Image 1 (cartoon, rainbow, N blue to C red):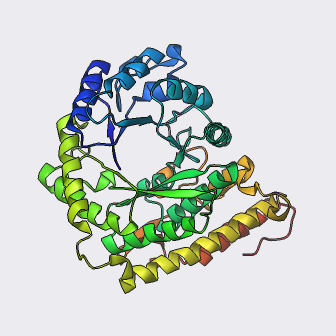
Image 2: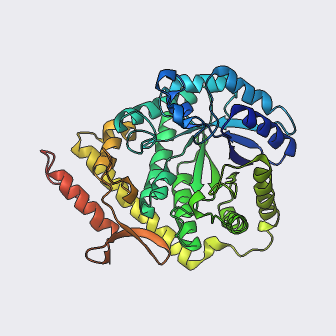
Image 3: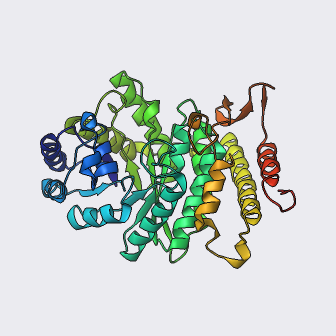
Length: 411
């Protein structure tokens, strides 16, 4: 399946564009890009920012607007439609969305889209609680769920291991909540300076860990995409980036490819540009499995993937240690990873951190990284040295041990 974002600054242009995309029959799922006012203030018109109308996508102001979107897709190949969860009033918005555009699947963050990243009005802890609630809302209605969280760490230049651990954490959370059909998104090229081989190793580590959770009640659908920040502003070169990134994405045998239109680094995609990008991707898919050497067997890729899987195990030992210090025990509670207090502490302690999160109320933003041999790793610029993950975790847990009356935490 191919999906792509689409949303222009006016409803009228967006409706016409959806009809054109449907008529082109190149896209299976249209992901509606709605503006920030929609995401944050759909039910709060008095709080909308009049200077930000159409900022980031189409302005949607009523149930009728969403119904119009649904009607516009009833042409050509009748593509499915979906939209993100918004940044508050999650269950209420989910109800309107399901009644109008029949959301193909929900896309919900875990740690983001709140005051931490400036995308919403909720605190970190409140948004985590509401994100968990809306995931359960979709579970109760049998709607597939995507947690669009891991790549947000990569977009903020977090070390590879943070994205990998977050991916595995999200998968465990949705499974515990009862999700049966999980859409795991693997965004390549984030950070954009990561090498192709090390990027692939990172995604293979995520995939391997998530696959361990699959059973008769839990299916993981692999969704890949090109990282927006990797696109050059030169549109011809951006087409090349889309093609090469998609080629390596095929190594994951994706069920869904999120086609990031080659123009998106420069301007919002038009229907014709979306169709052009889809044709590029379709050509890569058509020829991509014809005798190309399997990059997943490359020794460098395998070694890095194995290293990230091992480091992820260390991260989860640290998570369990933090839970224990908070008075939470895995053995007594299968829902340990659903505890908002624990999840919030993973961020405020610095276990989950990224350089771009400096100067916000929750994440520390202290971690520093460097691209070394193509991989994004934790780095100490003062000592001019790589920081092994064991050492980074030990420093965090040693600092945390001073906050609690329990003995020092040891990994």
